[in-house]
Image (tube, rainbow, N blue to C red; front, side, top):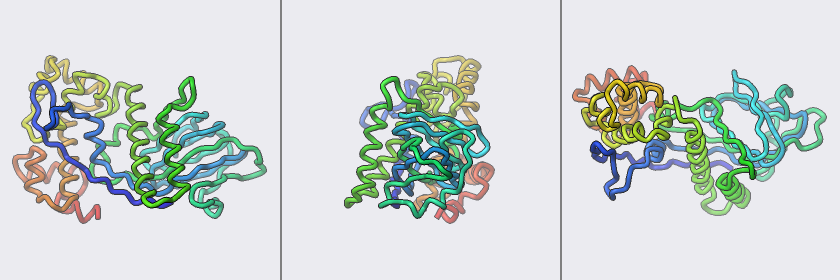
Amino acid sequence: MNIDYDRTAELHAQSSGLEGASSPQGRPIDLLSQVLTMIRLHGELVYRGTLTDQAGVTFAAGPAYFYFVETGTMWVTVEGGAALELSEGCVALLPHGQGHRIADGASTASEDMRNFSANMLGGDALTLQSGDGTSVASTFVVGSFRFEGGPVRTVLSALPALVTIPRQETGAPGWLKAISHFLMDEAHEARPGAALMISRLIDLLVIRTLRTWAEARPTNLGWLGGLSEERIGRVLTAMHAAPEHNWTVESLANIAAMSRSIFSERFTAAVGESPLRYLTRWRLTIAADLLKTGKVRVTEAAQRAGYASDAAFSRAFKAYFGYAPSETRRIHF
């Protein structure tokens, strides 16, 4: 089933004080939601797969993928990486669109996915069988999609090539089983509005996977790393709520209630880069998203990103993205 989904991004520009930031309604800002609202997901294909023994399939680089193993085991290998076994109840997210392969074993030979396209049944079922394999090695739900938008580099830079959530002692997490159930129900029935429903469900699955994964890995995860450390999280929230503010290491350290040296050390350990370097990347991310809409001039984008002059903004923007701010909309559309 083909999906075309463009979620409207809402940029937050609330003021923040030393205690962190709040929405206009007085609720604390959810940092994860705030960052992920800047990403658009364009889903492409969702189906239930069956992998037989002695079967291996190679997928070319391009879209991102997720896999949820319903029964049995399968192995996933991202291009240039080691094979990883996924057992029943596991979910894997391949966010960077790298080429990869799935197979019934770590060393099973594989053939190109395009050889199986004719076996697709009704857009929601596919049997991946090669060689002499006859028994079922695994069944799984798989979806392909693309991240779109200027902020992608900053938002996804914290993620490895393969994000995995292991099964719980009682099996797959309840949220995962529920989402995959509704996902396949929509793909199978193809009712009016199914494409939008599938896109929203993919969106939900990706966000929940990232949140679960980040909670279990508290350090060196870029902005995700700050979610698990309360005082660093307050600083990230303040940065995100008011990127145009004239932040200094001292003012950010005050929000964290730390000395400058300890704050810089803790922030760098949790996020993977210094506070001001992260702030620069976030400001440019916001500016790129604003310019993509075509409704904001370069001068306004520079001001809302905290730059005092167009020249300084343009230099920083081009150094980071590789093209001038004025070219943003033409490049992305």
